[in-house]
Amino acid sequence: MSEQAASDQATPGQANEARPNARKVREGTVVSDKMDKTAVVETVDRVRHRRYAKTVQRNKKLHVHDEENTLNVGDRVRVQETRPLSKNKRWRLVEVLERAK
Image 1 (cartoon, rainbow, N blue to C red):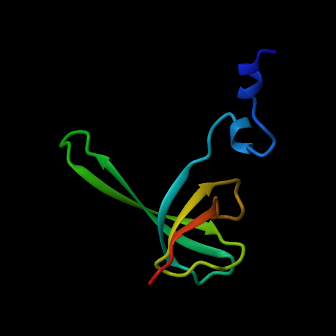
Image 2: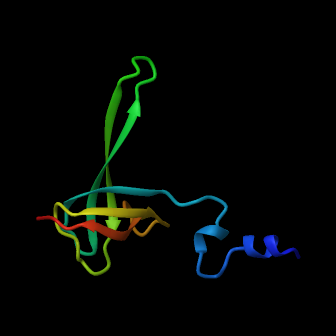
């Protein structure tokens, strides 16, 4: 194998490289932390309206797995798509970007 082909192969630590499709990553704000090991994160998606070309904000609430129950309302977080963990949970916490004040 050539040197470049060997360096292009995924290493065991990089699970996303071996996947045929990359998992979605979103940033949002925690709006609820009342559940055990689960938080609700609201993400804002800004898209252009097809006809009127105006920027429109679309909000989506995601149920996120928080193993240590460390999230509080108002925290800015980064979440990643994962396998279904429960009826509504399909996202997991990657990192806390900013703690609520």
